Image (cartoon, rainbow over all chains, first blue to last red; front, side, top):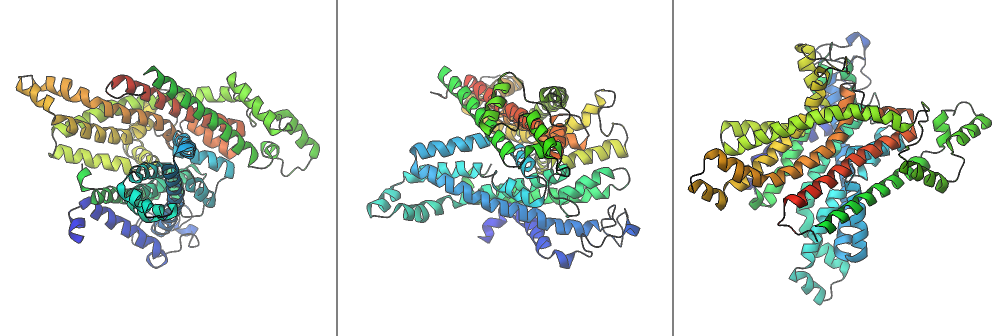
Length: 274
Length: 310
């Protein structure tokens, strides 16, 4: 297996970057030299990067590096938690639609297609408009909007597996629907679902940072990467480091997750390697 | 074919109708008393004032009557009246939409020309340094959040080198369009180039291409008539999808460059809790997306006669 991963540079690089981000998030209090919120000192306001503050400070004199490290916690928890909810909704609806067929299938797929006809950022904006700004509301807005793709893929896979002979065989020996779904169908769709979930974590992180950048996501002083960039815009002439480094953190995280997604897809299906 | 087109139009109409209904229910039922939000009178607990506001915006009527009124007005292209400025929402939206379309079209034309050209080059020179560099740019372009890309372009071109204006519309000259349009187009270029490359690579090894070369056609004739024309189908699909989402992406790009478009309007309306304006803007975004997708699907049906759409 290690040999296989070595042959797959995308997976190796993606995994490497993602592990670094997870490590930063988990051990944030140990890595960060300062507190991301409380260590504000106006005497250190807008310091450029140097020996004391590696990546400089913001208007309130807070250390940018520490805030980026703690920001990884917010981005990753948004990405992972919302994706768990989405995957659960998507897989459940996809399995029901694919397995039951008929009117239930039509209903679920119509809802899915309508959801797909609105860009996710706009859908999230509409929900945030109703719920109001705030980090918790982002979990709600993203947790219930990004499941459509998972649902479509799960349904398509279920439809093709349902026709296989081993399903008829299982049914012939008297297996219940419940058993067929959980023992025979579900294990066969985990691969593609995992790939979509990896890309989904990346897009949830991107949408969260966009909403926070617009000012309707995480609110200051929460060290969200999007909020930091939004502040940085005002200091682009005097203190560009405020907007440069959090952006690099976002790009690296998204790049890592996208490479990992591509890598897992190639790993699971070597024929499709393009 | 005709049946496919009609069914596709009906589907889009249904999607728009359901979307409108959902938007109406969600925005009017959930956030509590719209009159309080509209008047921002949570401080002044004057029942009479609140009742007046309710009566003014028709919020004292039952929900289903309000829904029917809203739908009826929509048929007459009336999106309601802004709670904040008392202007017609449609009058707020149209100049902003026009302003957004300016950057969207500039970005789109640039992305299609540059993206297809780069993808084609990468495929023809596959495995060389050109190919590798182009594909690294492509994956970076996809992973970069647009607002950060915009900030970096602003930093490079406006702050360090000072040869493009940083933000706003200025005197309306084309110089002000360049940076927002460039920000919108770079991720599109990346995606179009990637798709073009793999579509062309699929085509390049086909028998008919080899036959064309064998019968002595010139290189450019083979490239254009046999490879490019056949790979156009998958390119059109991705280009169409991109045009649909590019409107949504203007929301963040307009914030970066303080561009007074519809994205700017929706964000401000959210802050002001101006429900009719939010409703109108989101409707416009969804309409653009749905109509463009409908157009691409129909175009696709005409371009690819092999597939039956019955």
